[in-house]
Image (tube, rainbow over all chains, first blue to last red; front, side, top):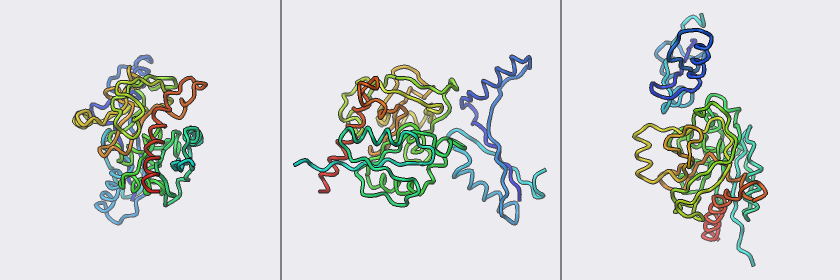
Length: 83
Length: 231
């Protein structure tokens, strides 16, 4: 099973990368606000059903993929491999 | 007859680059510095451990996040749990935070710039094995060189650390966006310290400052006391 993990800077956490990108976009003439930059991790998970896959990826997030002090994460599962 | 030199291990991760500087500085301060490869599952007989600066594992994912799973880190955790002295410098500080041995996390500098210059830090506490040669309030000039030196912890944790006097070193002016200008934090038990400035780069006036020796010589003293205790 394929999983996509979206790791985001938590609400309220300063994101200097996002601020720099936001300022650049404005400079280019785009009207944007609140750009935030996170990370995307794609994984093949060796699990038979979505529940097992999700709990496996949850454990990965807790131990390595995200730091709970500053990051939140969201897990998307794709049964038929990546789109 | 001279008393035995304390034995201080300096860990080497793939991407460490201040390991030899740390070993050199410790040796200059009369310690027996030994390099320990990260793949070792056991530490040799040591009186203290230093996690040096660098870019372990290319700072992939988050700085320090991968190195914390090195085999030697399990041994370091055990060493720390038994009261062993552990000093983390820069990347070493980042690894200790990711490993849960120190509170908080190091984030990209507020300026997004790699900061490489001498900074002034104030010693908040001199009653630690890492600052015993200092006086409280003493200001030390020690260089920083990092892209991710912005220490962060949630408000309630910061409040607790301040109340428990776990902030040992503080920048005298904002450097990288660290909460409360924190430059160095100690664990609750008082045997693990992490700091972003590099004391090993400031142990001789020829290097621009010798103030880093206050920190490293304190560690050597404390390690030496442990050597004597076990001889």
